[in-house]
Image 1 (cartoon, one colour):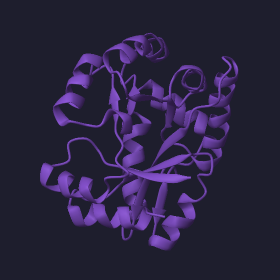
Image 2 (cartoon, one colour):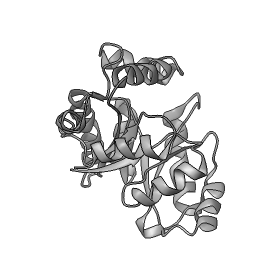
Image 3 (cartoon, rainbow, N blue to C red):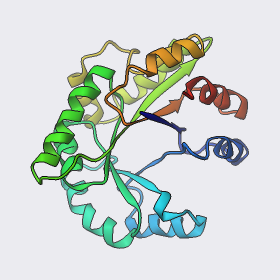
Length: 227
């Protein structure tokens, strides 16, 4: 199991640039197709000079009313208009996980407990078995807060997502976990490492840092989360 590092979109360049340099081997992002079309995504890759053979491109349905249909139909255009990259489908529910297993190059979980991630991985494997093919790798965001106020930061972030739209509401209902407990709230590095190690169902655990938007605070979470 390896780890990546993720931050919220919109981080200021003077924070994002040194942080990206620090975590060059770990950076991850997911783009919602209700806001970014494949041609636009390809343009960003060209403009930034990203090496396509290194890129795992995460894509999701965003606020689409029929997310499963959108992501099933989008795959052809993505393959055609964003060539040479590996496509990772953002999935929480069983049907989207099945789709990822059967057709995408990877799957990206979000807001899961270690136990739920284990059961969700089975849905990916069942989707792959229907083709059949080998199951793709499983990535997953794990929100991580470290130090003073960690529990409050995790609870605040989770509270926002629990009512963001029906997809999240349905997911948290299936999850059945108490509010403020989905992720890692740790006093220090040792506790963070212990809690992150429980996500054994993930091939790549992507640490989503919950910290103030400064290089120092973000780097501290990165340091505490690095194996």
